[in-house]
Structure formats: C-alpha cells, structure tokens
Image (tube, protein in one colour):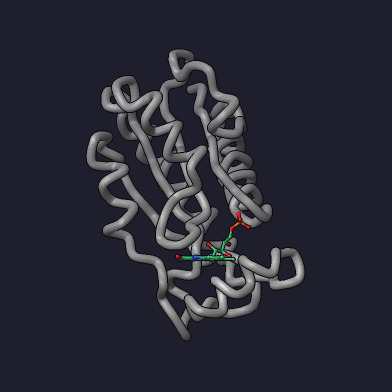
Length: 164
Ligand SMILES: Cc1cc2nc3c(=O)[nH]c(=O)nc-3n(C[C@H](O)[C@H](O)[C@H](O)COP(=O)(O)O)c2cc1C
C-alpha cells in the first residue's frame, strides 16, 4: 500500500520520529512518501495517512493544523494514524494537554492517536522559546523511546494487514 507519512517539526526531533515510522512501514512492505504537511498537494494516491506534529504551547504546529483542515474531507474516509511529540510522559512534568489537540482530530476518525515524549535541547532554541519552555517546566534531555515508536509503526502494519 502507498502510505503518506507527514509531520511538522520546529527543531527536528519530530521529523526524526516520522522518519523512523516511515522506515518501519517501508520494512513492513509498504511504499512510503515522507512529505512535510505544507508540501502535500493531494492525498488521493494514498491508502493510509500517518500525520504528526511537535506540540508547542499545547498545540500542534500551524502547518500540521493546516494539513488537517485542507484534507479533512478526504481523511475522513481513509485509515489515519496521528501522533504528537511533546514532553507529555516525561516524569517531572506533563505540560501537554491532549484535549487541546483532540478537537483537531474530531473531524477525522483516527485509528489511533499516540503521544511520544520528545527532545528538549535549550542550545538549539531561541531565547523566547527557552523562557516559555522554562515556564512550562519542560525538562532538558532526549526522551524519545525508539522501541515504543517502532512498535507503534509495527502496529500500523499489522492493522493494515488485518484489513487487507
Ligand atoms: C517553547 C516550547 C514550548 C513547548 N510546549 C510544549 C507543550 O505545550 N506541551 C508539550 O508536551 N511539549 C511542549 N514542548 C516540548 C516540545 O514539544 C518537544 O521539545 C518536542 O520534542 C519538540 O519537537 P521538534 O524538535 O520536532 O520541534 C515545548 C517546547 C518548547 C521549546
């Protein structure tokens, strides 16, 4: 099956998560297109879509929002998986509020919606981002769980196979 994997990232950690998911879907025998949401012109060619975004101040990045708006109608009739990358699940703090992201997905019935812990590296951030992150209690470090990310991608492969 041809699958679109599209994700919005500001500082790269979400892009790397999307890359890992795409690689795993490819290993599962699917043909995968890895395209940024703003560069997707049509979803007609795809049998399934995996869409994700980093979470900034409780929200998906505008380009990912825009993707959901532009293709809401088509996505409604397709198998869709969604993921967020944020500091949700990081022990010290859980600033991500999934109910804020939820409404974005209410128009589209996603097969699964998953939050993965991300990476916070103050060195790559602007001064403003650093102070917002400090206020939000975001913890420094790379918390991405590659096994969990790979397992989630494998579950997509399994679910697609079950319906084929
Ligand atoms: C300014 C700022 C605000 C953030 N706000 C949130 C938030 O509201 N919820 C959350 O779960 N994570 C939040 N994070 C953590 C990011 O989502 C996390 O660092 C993520 O891995 C960044 O993805 P990216 O590297 O793809 O841009 C914030 C990080 C920064 C720097």
